[in-house]
Amino acid sequence: MQPHIYEKQLKIPHYLGDRYRRITLPHLMNVLIEVSGEQTEEIGALSVREHGLSWVIIQYDLEIHRIPKTDEMIKVKTFAREYNRIFSYREFEVYDENDQLIVYVMTVFALINTNRKLSKISPEIVEGYGSTENRRIKRMPKPEVPKNIETAQHRKIQVGYFDIDTNFHANNSTYFIWMLEALSDDFLATHEPIHGNIVFEKEVHIGEEVDSYTELATNEEGQLISRHQIQVNDTVKCTGTFTWKES
Amino acid sequence: MQPHIYEKQLKIPHYLGDRYRRITLPHLMNVLIEVSGEQTEEIGALSVREHGLSWVIIQYDLEIHRIPKTDEMIKVKTFAREYNRIFSYREFEVYDENDQLIVYVMTVFALINTNRKLSKISPEIVEGYGSTENRRIKRMPKPEVPKNIETAQHRKIQVGYFDIDTNFHANNSTYFIWMLEALSDDFLATHEPIHGNIVFEKEVHIGEEVDSYTELATNEEGQLISRHQIQVNDTVKCTGTFTWKES
Image (cartoon, rainbow over all chains, first blue to last red; front, top):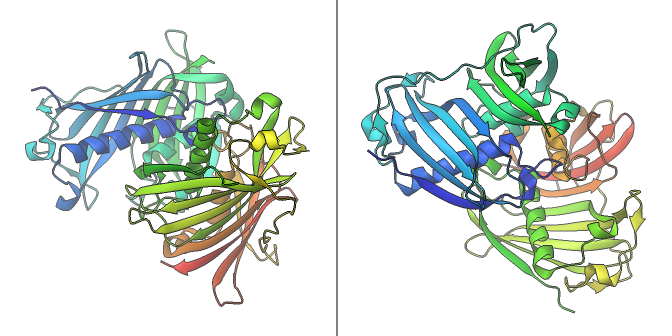
C-alpha cells in the first residue's frame, strides 16, 4: 500500500525565527505537527478524540541539512508509511524552493486513553493514511544522556501558563526550548544542529519545576554532540542528543 | 490624506493557542506585527534599516471584544493614519468571519538609530503608508503600576536564547508572557482580558534576570484589573495594565 502523502507550501513568518532569522527548532516542530493535523482533516480520519483517545509523540529523529530561514517558502511533505500495534511512524520532509530536501524528521506516535495508558492502534484508526501494518517494531536509536548529572550544565525553569497546550501538559516543542537553552546563549549563537534525537518519557505539568541538564562531548565520528536530560524532581521526563556544527 | 489599508486573511494555527484553543496574546501581537511587515513590503516603503534606523514599539493599547480561537479564519486590517516628529501611530483591526470587529489595537512606534537614540520621522519614511502629519502628540493613557512592589505577586524569569529577536533584545511579545504569567496559572485559566495597555520603557537583554510584579485591583467602573511592572535589577523595563472578565 502506498501512503497518502500530504503536501503544504508555506512562508515562514518572522515571529517563528531566532535572532539570525532561522526558524527555531521548537517552532519547526510546531509547523510540522500542524501540517500533519491538516492531513488528518483532509482525509477525514476517524476522530480518535471522540473515542476517548489521543495521539502522543514518543520520539523525534531529525536530520537537518539546513535550517529554513524566516520569510523563506518551504514545502512540507508528510506521510505515515507504517504502524504496528503500539506505534505509528510519521515522516516529514521539508524542501526548499529548489526542491532540495533540507530537513527530514521521523516521528513515533502512540495512542493513549483517558487514563493515559497505551491503547492498541487498530486498522480503522489509521485508515485513510494508507499506512501498512508491519508487526516488527522499528528499532529507533536511543538518545545519549549526560554521563554525570553533577557536573552537567544545568538550567532550572518554572513551567508557565503559556507552556501548556490543549492536552493540559507542556507542549512537546517546549521541551526543545528547555533542552537547548541549558547549552547557554553563546553556544546556540555560534552552533547549528545537524541531527537531533529526542525521546519523551513523561508529561510535564503546570507549576512544576524543570531541571534541564546537558553535557557536551565528541562522538565516534569526531562530531560535537550535546546530551540532554529533563527532570522534574528526580523523574526523567525527556532525553535527547543533538549533533552540532559551527555556524 | 487617506491611509493605505492593508488587509490579510489568515487561519490561526493550533500552535499559537493556549490550552483552551484561544490564540495567546503574545502570539496575537506577533501575528499583527507580521501583517504590518507585509504592508511595508507591499508598498515598497523606504528601508529604514538601510538608513541605520529601526522601528521600535513604544506602546500597545488593546481592546478585546473576543479572543480569536485557533483554526478560526480572521481578517486583519492595518493602517498608519497619523505621525508626528517622534511617533507613528499604527492601528490594527481584527475581524471574524461575520465581519465583526473582535480586537482593536493602537500601537505607537518610534524610530531609533544605531546608538538606540530616537530619530526624527521624516515624510519620506512614512511615504506610501498615506500617513498624515499631525504635530500634536496624541495623549495615550499610561498604565497603572503596582502600588506596592513588596506585596505584589512576583515571578523571576531567566531570559533565554529563544526570547531574543533580530534586534538582539527580548521580543515585545515576550514581555506579555512575563507580565501575564506573574498572575498565576489559576487566574489565567479562569479569566480573559478585555483591555490591555502596555508601555515598553527599556530593552531586556540575553542573560538578564527579569522580575515580573503584578497586583490585582478594582477600577472605578468596578472592573477587575491587574497592574504590572517588569524590572531588571531596579530598572523598570515595561509597565502594563489589563482589565479582566471571568471566562
